[in-house]
Structure formats: C-alpha cells, structure tokens
Length: 144
Image (cartoon, rainbow, N blue to C red):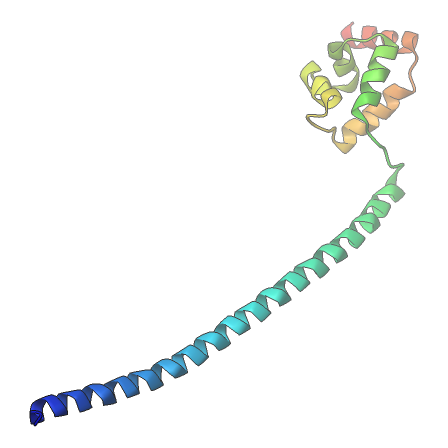
C-alpha cells in the first residue's frame, strides 16, 4: 500500500502541472497573436515606405521643373567637359582658372569622382560658348 505522503505529493504535482499547462496555453495564444500583429505591422510599414518612395519620385520632377523655370536646365557630362577642355587646348589648371575652381576639382569632375554645383554648371556652360582664341584671351585677362 502506497504511503499517503507519496500519494499526496503526486496529486499536488499533477494539479500543479495542470495549472501551469493552462497558464502556458494562454501565454502561447497571446504570443502567437503578437507575432501575427507584428508581421501585419511590418507589411503595412513596407507598403507605406513603397508608397512614400513612389510619391517622392513623382515630386522630384515637379521640383526640377520649378528650377527650370528660373533658368535653363544645365546638364553635365564628365566626358563632355574633358572633350571641351581638350578642344580649347587648355590644361586642367587653365580650365580651373576660367571656371573659378582648382585644377584638382576639374580633374575630379572629368573622372566622375564629383559633380559641379549649379553655379559652377553656369560657368561651364559659358565656357562652352568660347572659342580657342577667346578662351586664351580670357585666361590672359585673368592672369594679367
């Protein structure tokens, strides 16, 4: 015949396991619900970010059009600047003097490491209209 203490101990253990199981079941359900909610929120954030980027892309051309109204929109190509400089027979340092920048800046523009600012684009556009003699004359005026 089993000892009453061992029977009582096993009954207490059984009831404790039952209570813990019930508590764990509610925690598991809550955890699953939270994970589901988090996944839904992540999907919503991704959709909102996608919409935001789509709207931002549409807004950029409008802003560029507003800038274009103030003056002509100037484009820049590194290869074009190098070709123009060689056509005029100028060194990078001389081209830099004409544009009001350093020779290193001209080199960086030509290699594509950097791009000119809008004010510098206007200066580049004005140099595009120069011929060889006119460019040399402007250089002499700047030096002398």
